[in-house]
Length: 210
Image (tube, rainbow, N blue to C red; front, top):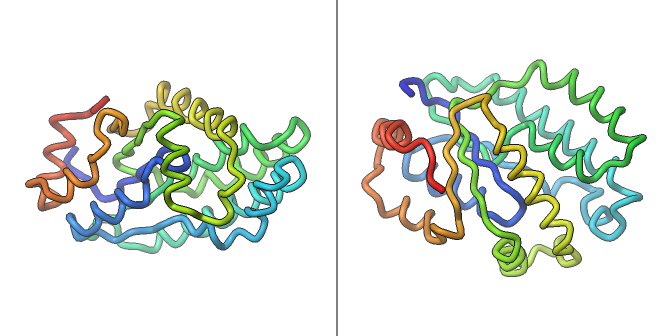
């Protein structure tokens, strides 16, 4: 993997994506693009009443993430390593779980048009964790709009993610199981991977951690 310019970190809610992005960015002197979930005006309403607010919530995220992706195209990623805490396809994973049979076809029509202008990452890091671990992390971070988050929803989302990445072949993929490596961010922070070159070599030698 000689050309490592754009890394995307993915995983279900509560797995620690943003924390890992920030640690890697500091370690590798990389630029970051982070999700702006707090800007979604429908998110709190969605968790209170998913059926009523799912489509508005999903469409807002889709367009917001698309705008970020277009900003990404303006960044000189061939000279500056870029790390994000999501992939554009993330929106489809949530939509498949959140939208009903009438809403999903309309959503997919819009998503199909937008995806044509999205850049694929050079490497995807998928963080796994069991549902109990995700729920503990969600409770621990105390975000107000997540106070009514149900375990059943997180469990279903976790299954959607695992099924997707079990079949994923679009780019190189590094899988880190947070249950087996709960202190992975701390290990990365204190490790000898102090440069982009060393990180690239480490990933090349160890394509999957599970």
